[in-house]
Length: 328
Image (cartoon, rainbow, N blue to C red; front, side, top):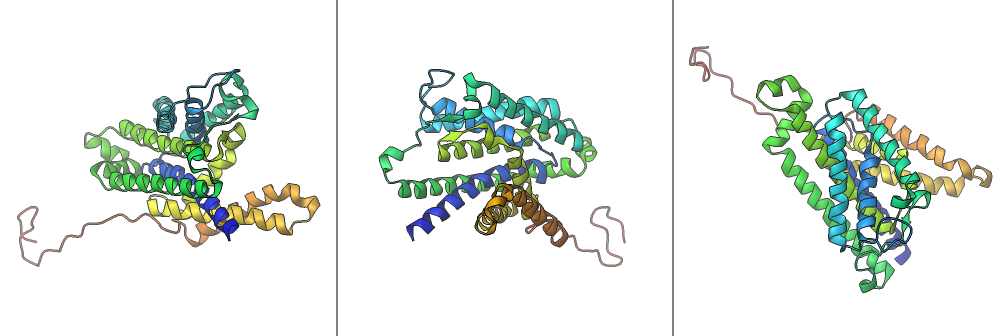
């Protein structure tokens, strides 16, 4: 029984960590229309930044600042935001395919830097040895994993409430205005470039938070964790759940992550030994099939965006029009 609970805690912890990144992407794409193909760059910046700031001394490279965990976590998020600000100033004026290609190029450059800058990131072997917060105090690994799961759940809840407040505020309506009709937003005296940049940076900082929590949970981060498949998974979660809806983003994360983990377990259990090498490729096909079927069945996702509309009563025949004062 303990083994089942432990596995469920592991499953939910990773799913909730990824949900934060999906919520960040939903702010960028679902509410603002920014196609971010460089998710792993900001995810990695948060993870590496947190480990470098809070990790132990490194005799062969940069690190050893040993900051307290809250400061290291905030530092990783800030590093993601700084990277997003630099990238956003250069790319958010681009549109659609051009923005996707530019941000994907940033992700490739980030992964290459992490793999080759041994003095900074440990190279291909990554950074390990990070002491997880309160682990020594709790002592029991099972209890600690449960505690960390609830901590991540708290983080997801705070992020969700923040985004719900944001998207239902006047700024949230401005995001959708820029997404739907940039010229109309500009005609009202708004700056679409500033709005897009703000959404891009906030979304990237949430991805950085996700990466920092991921590195905390595993006490390790390497370039293998920044593979392009992560970007594919996060986009799949948003598409299946429903872009423009924060609830859909969370639900899509649970569905796709469950399909990913479940298909891996099933293929490992039933595939012959000589085919075990190809189970990863089959997983890609299965998750891709889920996206295709969901788009055919629910083109806007499981929980699509719902915009509130205001209805106005029609005037009675012969009654004066409330806007013009003339009779209808």
